Length: 423
Image (tube, rainbow, N blue to C red; front, side):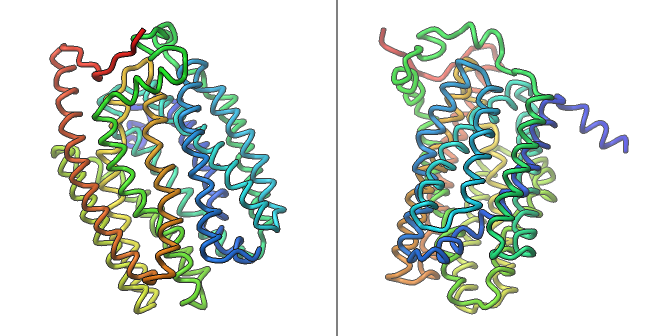
């Protein structure tokens, strides 16, 4: 009990409220997300059309993440968090009654826009209330809460059955409402006063949105991180798209087996994220980056073999290895952006860091499901393992730059990211 109290006292109460609200929200949201391909199939979508509709979510995320970061740095975190959650309630209610492919397409775009608008404010708020030396652990705690929801959600969805579309999305809308109320009552505005005052051409990149983002993307360390994240995300997206439709045609008990992949993923993160974070913090972050990517790649190879044998046990083993890679890779990724970002434009950096997930989410499902029709799902899964390894090398380069900047800051050298804005 004392150990748990010590863990609680290490962080701001705001962090715990944000984590709890995320847990409530994601648990019921992920009752439906893994089965979106089946909802689209029931509405009459082909494999290729399913991939295109799923890609609309990350396409919208490209714009939502950038806009959310901009508004969060200028207007504050709390308005963005509450606005995004309110809009998502409406989107979830729309999903509850959608029956046509075009309806799913519109809702997928809106959901991606709203969800990505939320994320930079959430990431920046955690950094606002956490000292730099504790951010990896703080983000790990947040990730544990998120993945507990991601793990429990598919299990509950599988128990309810994908035929209960209206019920599942209605529950998700209700839980998102409760999570939003929790943030409204318990989370203060976290944007530091000095950051709000620092909205100058030098510190904030200018108030004009285009000049602000031009400033952010002059930071080459951020660009390398974005490229590495893009490669790993293209690979990651195959589990929710190409692999999902591959198993549909090969398994009679698809609901249970596929839902268990995400349950294993979420629960292992809950159990192992904090211990693995503590383990790899003893080593240079580049070690965690390459180890995570290599393990990630091995997981994709195992998924490919399991799709050929179609044995649920093999699929579950692949899910374990794949998840271990994700957990290890999360250690260097967790606080990278907030470590290299100037305080005044922290949310913009977080918005830029969401681009790999947005763009990868477009490329991954579209290309993966298309290639599945040509070479087959197992071949696609084997191929993306190469992307994971390439991402590892780029993460190593990015980690060396973060180490250099943190060392310079510790020595009192200042060391801001190398950007400027023409005036």
